[in-house]
Length: 325
Image (tube, rainbow, N blue to C red; front, side):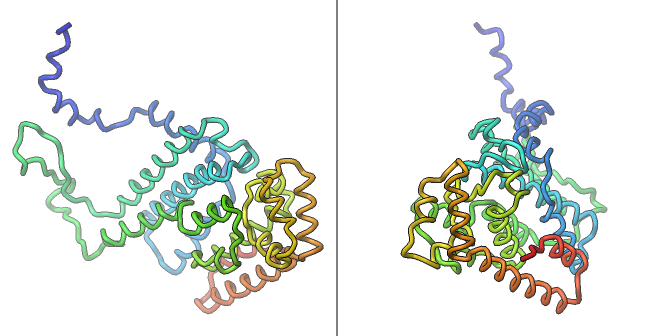
C-alpha cells in the first residue's frame, strides 16, 4: 500500500520538470489528427498569397514573414474545422469533413489547440526575455531565468511589432477565426431565420478583397460545378445560410416566401435545391446582380492596387479569382 508513497515527497519538483509540460510526439500526433487530416488536402492557399502580396509593400524580413505565414495557416485551417461543425457540413475540399470522422469533441479540442500553436508561432516575433522557472528549493528571485546571453540582450526599439500590438493582433485573429461578430450574426440569422440586409451581412468585413472573396464564394457555392464536387451541391442551402445571392433573392421579392421556406427545410436532396437555384437565376436575377457587384468590387480593388503603385502578386490573385459573367 505504501510502496510508491515516497515519490510524493518531492512531487512539486516532478511537476516542474521538462516532461511535465511537454507532449510526446505520439500525444501531439494524436491530438492533431483532425488538423493533419484537413491540411493533407490543401485548398487554394489564398491567405498565403495575400500575405506574399502585401509583403511587396511591407518588406517584412523573410524569417518574420515565415512566422506570419505559418501562424496564418494555423489560424485559417483551425477555423475551417470549427466552421464545418457550425454549418454541419459534409464535405471540405472534396473529402468528408474532419468532425464526421473524428467526432465533434475531438475536432473542437484540436482546433483550440491549433489556435494556441499559432499564438506560439507569433511569440517568435518577441525578443527573448526573462521567464519564470519552477524551483521549489530556491527563493522567488532565483526562479527568473534569462533566455538570452548577456551580450545578446534584445533591442526593444528595433522590434518588428511591440508586445502590446502583438497581443492585439493575436486577440483579433483569435476572435476572427469563425467567431467574429460577422460569423456570430450569420449563425443568428440562420438559426432564427431572420433575413439581414446586404449592408448588415458584410459590414464587419473591412478588407475589400475579403469582401470580394466572400461574395464570390457565395456565388460559386450555388453556381460552380467545382464547388459541387468539393463541398456538395449548393451546400449553403443545406446549411440554411443567408449568403449574398440568397439575401438578394429574398429582398428582391419579399412577398414570395419560396427561398425562406427552402432555407427552413435545409434540403439535403437535389430537387428543392435546383428549384431554388432556378428561382434565383430566372425570377429574381440574383446571380446577375451578384456578378455585377463582383465586377464593381474587382474594379475598385484593381484601381486601389494601381494607386498604391501596383502589386503583381495581388493582381494575379484577382485574375485567378475573376468570375466571368
